[in-house]
Image (cartoon, rainbow, N blue to C red; front, top):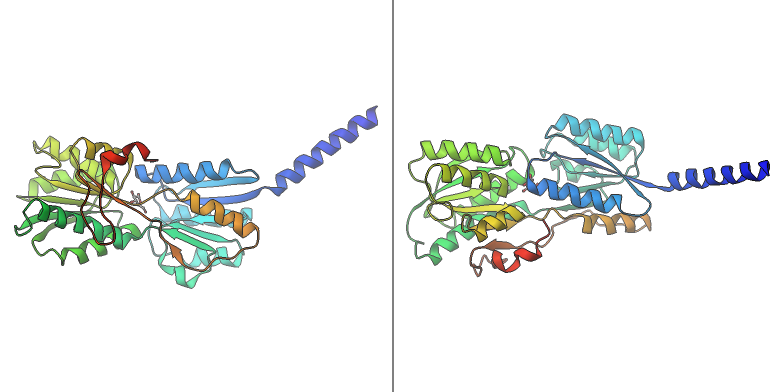
Length: 329
Ligand code: AHR
């Protein structure tokens, strides 16, 4: 009897050990939690990996510091994880550590912000926002909206609130913003400053602009959190957001939809944080031995506003109120 008992215990232990060692360990180096977008992105990837049978997540929050992310990547190498998901707080300075990932032969998946060194390193798949196009859409929306209001020939003052300096989401959107401004010569750039993709800094930057710039007609905020912070500053200054100042955000988070429906924000250009639907099937396919091209896949994204119907060439805006109930973040 004793022998049978020990045999059963040994068998159970063997099953436990072998199923534990069969887990596929996916490590994720996240930037931080600066915005609603980032929270949605973290939740989406975390829950998809944690709920996937046979997968285990190792998560690291870099707290907006490149050195923390570099440390995390080196830890992942030491732990010999099976896959690394990576998005970098800034676009430069990753060459060395990502080469170390390559040398350790850990398959690397790039999500969201693609580092500048992407063409010099190996990665198995990449999914990220088309930040230049998002920036173009923001300014084009403002230009076309003003035409619709019959103000296409009036000079209007525009401020651009930028994201974290050096992040590809900032450099790309700024490039798109500035290029599109050339198509709308009546949009005059009167302010350009970083709000670091956070609500608090967005509010502070807008407060200082309202004191130092005599007239602001349009705010282009490179994410919704900064736009929402700016709305608080505009209200505190006794102005009416969405009317006295036209506000165009980016991301299309739930709070921006609410602000548009409430008439306090005019438009949000979508940048989806929902990458699990790309990452999960990709890792499953890699596990089956499939290979992917070294190309960056951009998800399809929309533009949402108060009334819909603004034609931006590549996309037509959709009335936010019509789709708010279907939004997932
Ligand atoms: O990289 C995506 C950007 O990062 C989002 O637009 C912003 O909200 C986030 O912090």
